[in-house]
Length: 208
Image 1: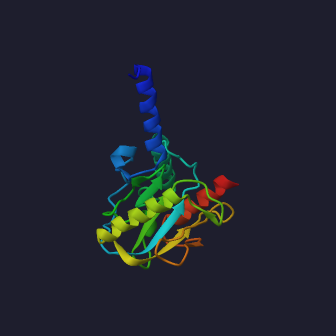
Image 2: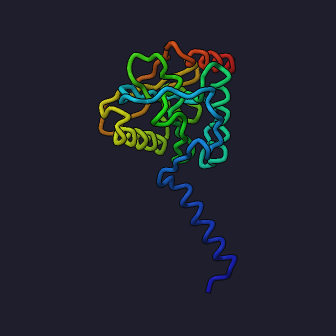
């Protein structure tokens, strides 16, 4: 018969295994990560996205600790809103093991999408990445699962193009191999008539 201490150790070991396995997806709505209210109501997200922008956040990777991820999300939102955005610039962000954090979601237009030529969705990828660096496989799968969710919800065109966007050419830009497609994501410095440029300038100042 196992002692109580043995049972506790066995339970802890099982818990660690479940966390490390990165199994399942964990959705966190705005309330769950402590989002502030937008400065004003966002425009509706009414058309299928033709472009999917992936943004390395250039913040610390928050690993399996979703407490850290929530703090990171609040910091990102604050930084975006201090630099001209009405809200956090992402529709969603992917962080931690398999966490999906809601920004403007599937119903509100991302502040980074304002004045874009085609409908777009913006996904933040939490972590610091060097140019040409592949993002971890569990993060890739979480991104793909999120995009599939958007396709099934008629928010993303099944043939939408992926792009990654960098704020600072010396520090960011990564590669993502899309399952069932031959191409990898191309990295660009996005230029648009919206708050993205102000946020990008702020990132570059911080990096100096």
